[in-house]
Image (cartoon, rainbow, N blue to C red; front, side, top):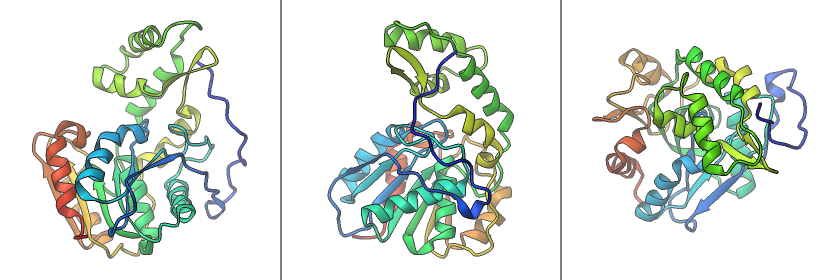
Length: 287
């Protein structure tokens, strides 16, 4: 079995949601601060800030805005925590903005990151000038069993010590393939396989993700809408934004514009990169 990454001990799960504790997120900044608020990019489940690096590079270069990428809790280089709710993930981003002295930002989140971005905008609209939710809406996603199977498959991967990185990835790929049948998805999951002291481990906190999978697939209840401009940018070949979601989108985001990029699936920014970047640039406010 793979060993979990060593990590500093964190407080036990809070007794009440109001007592959620933020963790200091691993992050990087591209470009100097400009006249516009910085763009903050939030990745999806099993991703990391590297998942959106190509997007970040293009937006920093072509928008003239500073772009911040970050790792969500239990992902990438950010600390592990037993708590994995949108309230907690939103608080992490709020703490990072405060630490960096960012009074207002433009949030762009994909999938789980989109739900974190929506939760933050609904909780703290004063911090969010504009919001872009990529291929996700503020409703429950009915793929819990699918992701649960992926987590079980990842937990069962067994790699002997001493293998080269390429050999380890190849072995893990073959062990995942009976359950995770799409090669592209396997390669994405394998970005989380890292070597620590000669052993290969998953850097994502599979226990916390597994425990909170229903939280991640659902969305918290909010009553007060976010008043700022919002773009829901979906892939035309993806089921994650559906016409049945429109009433809830309009209720929570009355200034929402819903667009679909033709020929793109769930990973919109990978499937149709140029169309995606153009749509984001067109939505940004003038400098």
